Every structure is written in structure tokens, then in C-alpha cells.
Length: 105
Image (cartoon, rainbow, N blue to C red; front, side):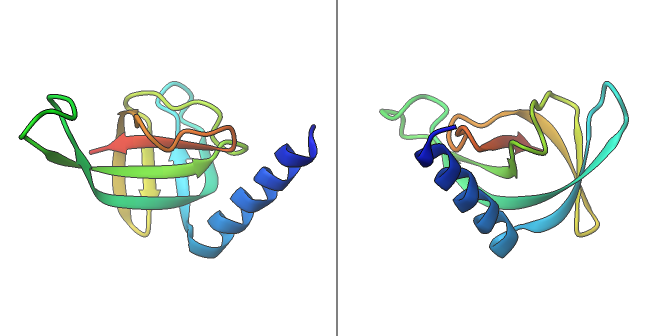
């Protein structure tokens, strides 16, 4: 592991520890709950017709440390502070080597 990779991992861990909320992620296929930290991104603006589109929409995204959640699939469930979310898809933005970001409903 490179020096940059270690620094990136430490930074990701600190961000989630500082602004993340306790979450429980349950894969639809296994039903096994995983305790993790999550960051909720509300009202993320999207351009369904592309960047030239005059139509915009909003979505809710949730980010997790990739060390805890390796892969996300449609139908997986997330509980954060008593609120239940269901994974719709991977987000187009925010998926890095150390975190995973999903679109939820």
C-alpha cells in the first residue's frame, strides 16, 4: 500500500468518524446486518437529460466506508437514526477507492 493510499484511508476514516452517523446496512441477498458509519447527502441535484438539460431533479445519496460495505446492490436496506432507506443504484459521483455512495429511496 502506497503512502498516498494510507493517507487517503486515514482521511476517509476521520471524515466518517467526524460527520458520519451510525448506520446498519443489510444486504438483500444475505440478510446479515453490518454496523457502519454513513453520511447522508440530501437534495443532490441531478440532470436526467444530461448537462445540457433544462430539467433537474433531486436525489438522496448515502456514503459509506468501502472497508465496511464492499458492494451495494438494488434492494439493500439501510437504517440511520430510525429512518429506513432502500438502495436504488450506485451514485454517479462520490465513489472513490475508500468510499461507496448509493442513491436511495
